Image (cartoon, rainbow, N blue to C red; front, top):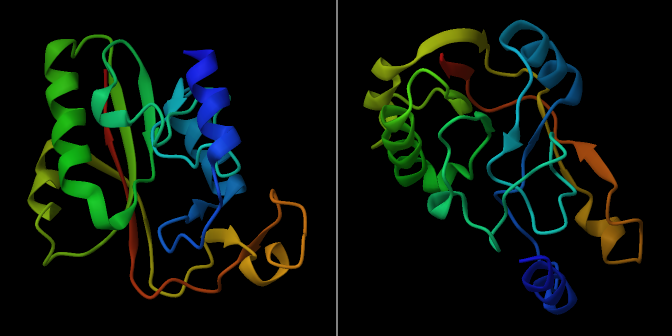
Length: 168
């Protein structure tokens, strides 16, 4: 498994990723203080530059193929792939509800194909439209050889953001 990751990283060419939105670290730590220690960050880039937790899953070890049971999983998924990730998370929770917790950071998109799944969660925090909550790589600087861990705030959100939680 470690060799698989090393091999994938050696072949990884970081391209512009419009889904790479990392939730503000200060807000993440506040959530963790309120909800308990997270075991794994479910949706990260392969190098973990946008990971909130030491343990993370990326394209290489896709969260949809992982066992979430027995873990407190933090998930700020790519917004273009929320439905299958939420369905998998809920299926995994149902297998071990006493030992599994899920926390999702999502836009409040009431029209989306996944929004109805919120009924399985408790809303623990809502941020209004315009809140400065996310960073992304500074793509212009990266193309000039900047440190790949450098991130920059992207201004206020274009939508409200909600943190959904499903407890152990």
